[in-house]
Image (cartoon, rainbow, N blue to C red; front, side):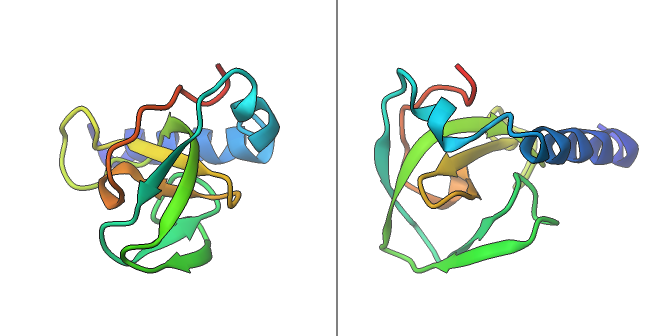
Length: 109
């Protein structure tokens, strides 16, 4: 996956978020929310990318309510979960590698 393709994915994700494709209300509809524990201090982001603005800083050991998952900027390799970001009840995203495993639906479903 080249840098141009990655930028396109990040831009598409940002546009989807800006257009309200992943609002908390639709994520809740029929979805099962789960609590996750933050593994190490991390940033909560405005959209699923390390380029996104930081909404909050989450401390290691804190818990967060995860509403759904979405694809975003790949982080930490090229495995099946490298592009998996989690949308939280705090109104922001964090990468799935940063928290304990959760079983939630994809955003928008």
